[in-house]
Image (cartoon, rainbow, N blue to C red):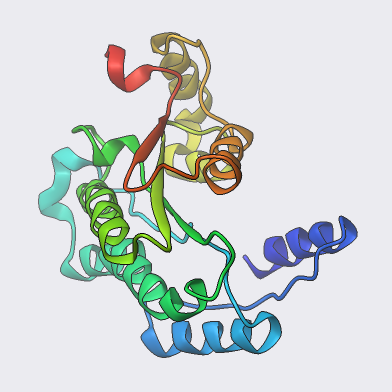
Length: 216
């Protein structure tokens, strides 16, 4: 939300950053072009792009026949078309950047089947595939990787799971070797490492799920 984004910008400014807050529907090409135009005017280049915009629906995979065409199109428009448009129109600014990289947000549901909504799972599989393709297309100047979190604590999962949030998160934690679910801090640590330290890694998807996907 705009309120949350403003709060994050205030924290960044307090830490010494010079922030630019822009509201953009990444599925709209004109909006993406406008956003990157604002970035170019203020900063002149891009060192890092984190494609984190995403959406889903509430219909589980087993009920995929209940998904409307409009719902399907909207999820794919934001989750994969939006990522493509941002990468497309960021290319010139990234090529001016210092050790530039792109980090795309995928999910373990893009790697294995599960009960999650079919359009969401399909979009995250596409994110992983496009990450690989972009790493080839933008190399050697720009590194491109993805992060694939498992179930994460927080507002997103609360909205998706509703009143079953606590029960289902507890059950998932018990099934995970590290006996907990992922946090935003876990994901941030990996994103930071990909930006600052993993300079010979590109085209990869880093799973952040405490070992769940490999042991269940």
